[in-house]
Each structure stands twice: as C-alpha cells, then as structure tokens.
Length: 177
Image (cartoon, rainbow, N blue to C red):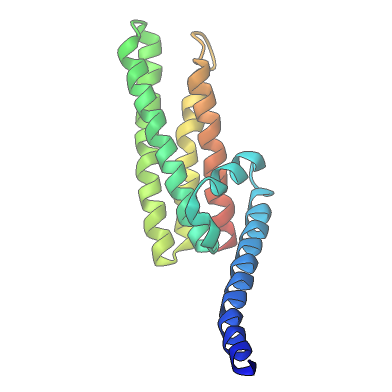
C-alpha cells in the first residue's frame, strides 16, 4: 500500500506543479495587461482587445507587442476597406477627396504596422515606437480632414477613434520594452 501511495503522489506532483505554473503565468499576464492598459488612451478597449486573442494567455511583454500590432493592423485594414467602399458610394467631390486622403493615410498605417513587426522582432524598440507613432497619424489625419462640412460619417469617426486606441496599446508596450 505504501508503494501505491508513493506512485500516486509522484504522479500528482507534476500535475499540481503544472497547475500552479499555469495559474501563476495567467495571473502575471493579467497584471501585465492591467499595467499596460492603464497607460493607454482607452484602457477598456486595451483590455478587451488583448484578452480577445487566445495567444495572450501565455504572452510576455514582447508577445503582447506582437499581438497588439496584429490587432491594430487588422483593424486598419478593415477600416481601409470601409473607406474604399465610401469612396465608391459618394458622388460629392469634396467628400471623395477627403476619403481618398483617408485611404492614403490608412495605407501608410498598414505599412507602418509591417515595420513595427520587423522592429519588434529585431529588438529595435526606438524604431518600433517611431513607426507606432507614425501609424497613429493615419486616423488622426483622416479625422483632421473633416473639420468643416461635409461631416465625417459616424462609422468612420468611430473607426478612427478605435485605431487611435489600438495604436496607443502598441505605443504603451513599446515604451516598456
């Protein structure tokens, strides 16, 4: 009986240690996310965005950087597609010109995120920060183009605001690396 107790104990110990490691890693990731997101322009968007990606559960700071870049770039591409659709739908030349400017800005943002990914991988965090800031120019400049009539469509305004928040996450992470 003593030998069966010792065998079952030796089997349970690795399982128990694995459980502790997973819980500790998860808690550390949650603390890291909370800390990062508290320094962004939209903490709730930050937490929601990072936790929506399953890779977050086991990510360190650099991993969260890659995740945040992926999320921001995906959002920029979706908004770019929306802008292309808006260009096709409008007959107003002034509005078409504004949309074309937004399209160019978002093209640049998408490219900037490609550069961010490269600099994160290479460990050039100063350049990562520079390109993350540059990606933020896309939604900012797009918004600025609608200072007078005709008004910016609400869906574009919301998309610009969301990308600004997502860029803020990339910047918060790059500032910690």
